[in-house]
Length: 73
Image (cartoon, rainbow, N blue to C red):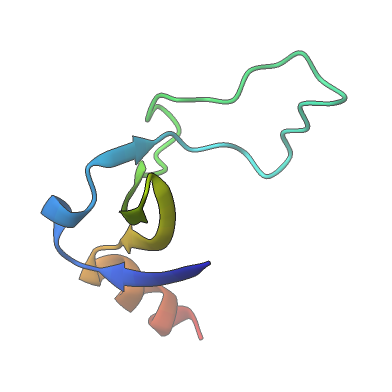
């Protein structure tokens, strides 16, 4: 499976909610959060499919998100 970063939102029509890294579906009945109440952004992605099977994933990031990570390093 291949993936790449894109800054174009039109390439990424699928929106996924944020799930806490502490969430364990096998040990908890708590549901993951699909609302943006935590301040975490939704992650958007898109795919290139062949015969209905995704072969490439686009992950949408903003330039500001990338700059924030670079500044911390």
